[in-house]
Length: 192
Ligand SMILES: Cc1cc2nc3c(=O)[nH]c(=O)nc-3n(C[C@H](O)[C@H](O)[C@H](O)COP(=O)(O)O)c2cc1C
Image (cartoon, rainbow, N blue to C red):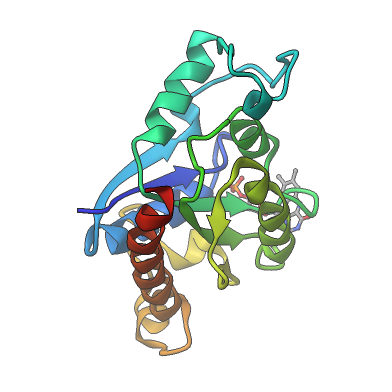
């Protein structure tokens, strides 16, 4: 079965991103083996190695980073859930990408974003950063335009009117996850 990680891209106290991720995890779980990777569980120093990870065959990452690398390597595909901070992704998420070398190489990533304006610039920034580590961002993305705190409860359940809307986030998420599973299967052949 396809193994998919849902990455929680914000760590601040009182964050909303974890609710969005919990909602996504439930949908992914219908189609694949799913695990939540909460960046709170992977505290890492800011990237400060002398050589770019992908150009360093002798690389010896510090244990906190190696723990993250080993975990990321386990999956066939990813859902990255991020808020928009200052027209970009969070610093903690960017750092978690910067430390990767080949763990996401030729693996697909679904993009789920939110923010005061739906997270479009966070998604744009992910589209620039992810190819740097060899990851393949899906062509579509989910811009969660409703306020997460009001739209999703603690259990990750989306409020009813948004579930029923054929153009709403639930329908979009279902499409994203179906696409992600298909890309995950297809890219296995690319990885050989
Ligand atoms: C430091 C900071 C910068 C933000 N910048 C933006 C922004 O540029 N665009 C936007 O749409 N929302 C912005 N927001 C709003 C957040 O996306 C929104 O509060 C979201 O809930 C944050 O996710 P979190 O609750 O998981 O931290 C910003 C929030 C913070 C804390």
